[in-house]
Length: 317
Image (cartoon, rainbow, N blue to C red; front, side):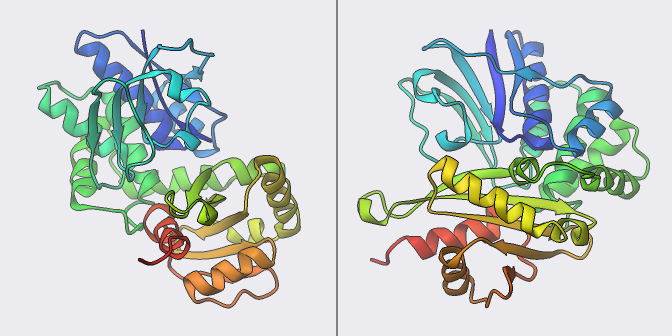
């Protein structure tokens, strides 16, 4: 049985892509099952309930050599701890190439689109398979989530075309209203502990030049996308404490947490210490004030935050 899973601290795309890809492989004659690598955020249960689908089980410990398929990630820091011991046979992803290595040639499908689900729709069409209503709803939800309903700069014409195709199949007549309902569910944070808020959409990234070990750094970068940024920023002291604990627990050089206002498309990033303040000032050209940095319309971690940090931490030739 092929285990299919997305990244740790899974978002809607990671969960739904695992479900859809496992089903696609099964429809093509394989044996595949979707799993997850962590707890769901607040948006994903809303999506799954609407689709009438149960959340995937947590991935059990896999023996060395077990066959797996990765969706929505390909970097070891964002995957299972023993990834190097597993046999990765398939990867479907929309992120940059990471440090993944394999002993045997895997099937790879990478495209610079806004969501893994956009690629999965293409795989359905290329296989000559109809898209069933449940899968259409899951893929549509993932695209709307990852692109913030086309607000993110990661959005491509392929994502827009995919939503146009999927909406009637999913029987969602008002896509905008559905997207706003998703974002409302994501923003219903209640009294969620600060440590949980930080890690709901949190990834580890290595920076620096591997050829120059003295330049290597490991950073944690979290994002809270919300329609109510005032609530999140009102808990800044708690979140900074969670960031400090994460830096110590994960052995990191620094931690950033961006609070993204979905509707106004702005980014206010919490500044933990002088280390993060220096990096934000020099890399992004902003002046942090009172523990907060205004990153303007830089709302995409994948396209606007991480590439800027990579360029900053990699010495020029």
